[in-house]
Length: 508
Image (tube, rainbow, N blue to C red; front, side, top):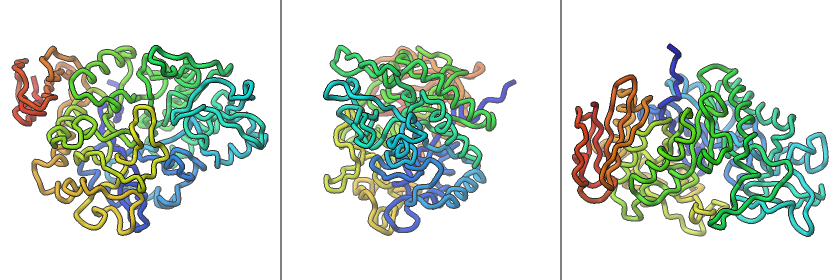
């Protein structure tokens, strides 16, 4: 039989490095800080760590504006620090995945400076003359305003899907494409286990720069600068390079829209190995419908694809607050953790999710996110990026200096040290659920079949090679209505499975 890739059904723990743990007191999380907490990460039972971007950057978008793909951000340490972290993680059986931003660079990158000056890399970015008194077309940036800025040195506009300081690489240029893919080769040779690709649906663009259409809701449909059919070919080249370093390497991508819109949301043997989209992370109405809609609608459009599933990351409001508001009960966070761990796919768990952290309140004068209002992403992302609370000490154990974002007082009762010793804490529940996923092959590898259940009950079966597991969740604050599926042998139960935010997992 063909060996099952390690990443199928794996749990990947996302570390937002700047907010994880500060080893030297400068207020910034760093790579030695991640290494210092590897025992904690190992105790969760996760298979891999996804590190937020670690490369040199002017930090206008906190690392997602890369100035040097082959270096290490000075706040985070040195290349030697990274190599030690990689070796230490591997010694513990933990894989390391890097976050690579290959759709664009910082305007401080040497490639862009050469391109703006009309040098050898003149066509490595997306340049165009204006139309009349304005930009070349109607494309709008994700962060607001036109997706074009004028460069006086070159006398042309350049395209940027995000900030003007994040110019778009021209993947239609063979040399630029080869250089971008070469970034992955550099880090694979160092021994990394794979990558998360930022904005994986927007590597290619329409060379004719056609205007984007407008949908019935008045929002622009991103058809010509993202979600292109030829994006799949670009992602396929990425995958082949990654796989050339061995069958155990993994690459997954970030896709903003659902897969039926295209953009290379991969099938089994094409494009990236796996992908996740934002609807599960932008949803704010609690109930079975958004999960059923995602799996029965969006993923059904690409049945051969192995998905990644995520409810949270550094770009969106934390799960507990998003679904339950400022006074949400801890049981809601626990139930959402259980759903995440039981769904089909590779699980992406954001740091602090295992602690049941709510969204932090950050005073306006302390905010660091350049975005204040990004479409449906609310008023900035700082509240999901505050430091991890480790203990009851100053700055909740994150740093001996002043943290880059303040440690959240509302996180103090949920710190790691307090939860470690409480058998029924959210942290210890997360460990049990991850262990259960590894113990039960249907949860890790099986298909998924949703059952008809009364609202607000979410119920589905997972099956692998004839082994079946039933998962049922009460997604409401009261007793669930009567629901009597095949009962089986209970593997795990909370609140009797039918109490407020209760759940039950059983082998059938």
